[in-house]
Length: 304
Image (cartoon, rainbow, N blue to C red; front, side, top):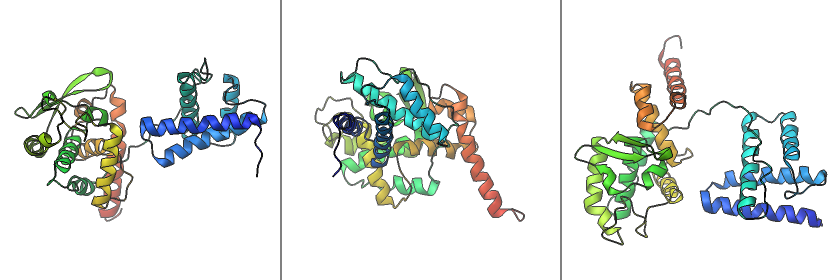
């Protein structure tokens, strides 16, 4: 059995509590948590060879680690994740009063291209929306949430924070408070409106613990649902629907934008609906639509 030095024990014992905190606070997947732990273990090994620990490392040493990774041919996206792991770890260390100063605070991430968002086909979306058991209050709630998410392209944080007062079904509008508390009005389609009406009459009353509550989509405790809880609900419904792709609440937001674009919606309209402050953020969806057009062309054109 490998005998650990006291220096190694201190460093390794710091990583696990941070990974546990990530799981509790952010609900990250096992794969993501494993990647973060691996990044920090590699950093620990690098530091140990140079006489440092995770506690004693300074900014120039951390930059040396990233430079070594870059010279080894690691891609910019992986380097950015390495840095994200390091920055998050040291923010946690400062927060927990294990360090007074964050040595990674001023280290900048390498430049990288914006990733093309994962999306679902319209067939996959229909299967997912049909998955909840609408004969139960919880199933009816989940159905209404999924329909509203796909109808409006909301961020998950916006969806779970909704109050009844933000919903105006007679006008077919939902008032959303996005990033930076920016307010926007988003139209709600007729199908989503119908399911919301049904949920408000038949599902929500059975979930409320306090009758005077304004929470639109209460959890089992009658409070606003957490993002992590809704993420787990979507994964469960994805399994019921037989969807093999990796699912997250953000996938429906991407599907909303991509399907609108595929059906001819203007990019600036999609920008407004999504609440993007910069059109360049929305333009990533044109790559998704272009890929679809290229695939259709190659499949159906006689000289494809």
